[in-house]
Length: 255
Ligand SMILES: Nc1ncnc2c1ncn2[C@@H]1O[C@H](COP(=O)(O)OP(=O)(O)OP(=O)(O)O)[C@@H](O)[C@H]1O
Ligand SMILES: [Mg+2]
Image (cartoon, rainbow, N blue to C red):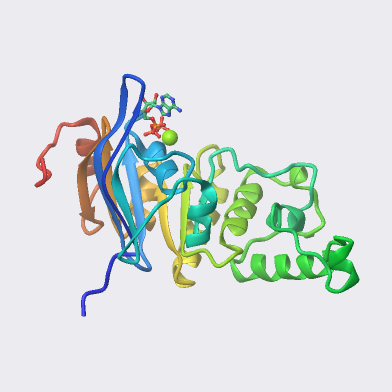
């Protein structure tokens, strides 16, 4: 029996006025796979992922999820499918604690009269947050700690933790290791491997090719809004990727 890809994007096109950000891009993400997405600045990486996460609506083309055609026109559509995006700027609320951030926008209330009065189930949310962080081996001293007191690496980890809290099937990360220390980068890469072990598929965008080569099963290269490379990460080197990225190499079969 043929197993359908988890996500398939076909002939995705997106224009911003005169700028053709995506010129008919295809993407395949298989179950339990880490897909590395690379390309130079303005290649269209973030735009493609914003189409998948519902931040942008594609002008043309289609998206299949588990082999079924889906219509993603707002972030909620994508989230309901189990697709979560971790943004470059983290989008955490600094003045709220870790547990509060993990449940941000999905706060849980107590049952009975509590639900009626919208009393938050703080203990329940704190307990679940702790479990989640432990499961992913994310080290945060206290779940009650305000996010603006965390280090950059811890914040990135909490943002990734939040993205996976609610039964995510796909986690998209746009530059998760930019501006992190070497040790924090290692943690994030480790976290990506943890997600994979928990059967979550991951798409990671990064300019750090060594990180991409470290964690990806497949790698896709975009250049000027087109897919110019899609290969299994076997025996690939940084130089190979650079050649595709800058256009020195253009032997992609579909072109
Ligand atoms: N909201 C927007 N309005 C107008 N143009 C946009 C918008 N979003 C993206 N673009 C343009 O689309 C092209 C692709 O941008 P995108 O952000 O997808 O690139 P990227 O591959 O993520 O680059 P980087 O590595 O620098 O993050 C760029 O030319 C950019 O200026
Ligand atoms: Mg980008």
